[in-house]
Length: 322
Image (cartoon, rainbow, N blue to C red):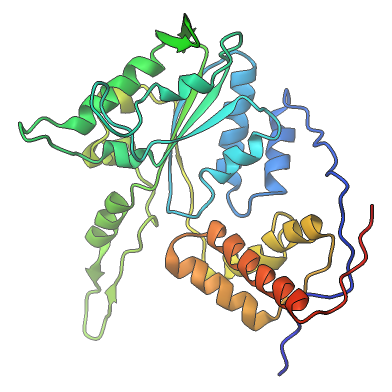
């Protein structure tokens, strides 16, 4: 069976900006419905995220932990919400170090990006599980626990002094909401391993536990390394579900937020893809553990190659629409 061409030559470049997103952010259902157009199979997470944003806008701050495998959309949801509420900061927490230590970033470094006249932010710490993984100094001090203690001071509300140019200013964190995102994959794997069991009776096969099949609890996170003082102050614990190969295949072409549809808007051209290529992309995304980001990267890479080869072969350049 012949594959459908990866892309269609009959296109024009589109330069018009996308229309403004119109969602009433004072209505959590509208926020939720907006997320559903972009996020697949994470309805519970979309609902929780919508309520976090809605509460924050209403002046109700919160502290939240989000768990789930890599590539399932933990951070992507907040990138989508940033379209509605620009005061969302996404911070890479994977290389945060203890205050006073050299190298890496510090817990409060993100405050340099905060508008001093309006510190009403939702701060999302991505890869937070890296901070919670126990790490010990030569003196056997748990450095990760000390870093988490600095997070604890932050979420309880503090006036942090920062330099803006030559001036020293105070930023109050009491009006901020915080979201701690992490896979906690090691703990999910341990739980799955404990679920492995053999059936009773002759011929019964071993039942393999699957990571993230069982939702993580606050006690699981504390056992992993999150300090109890921080875990107990979290308003919500949200478990994001893993996606299957078929889920990724659906995301490639069918979902309204698919990378293909995004590229069609970007290039102003229809894109066609074979089922064989779609399943290949989905399988790679699933097996790599990189998820939807890997889907987007694969399609963009193939797209780049096709367009470059077209011009390399000196084909006629498509007409540009202005």
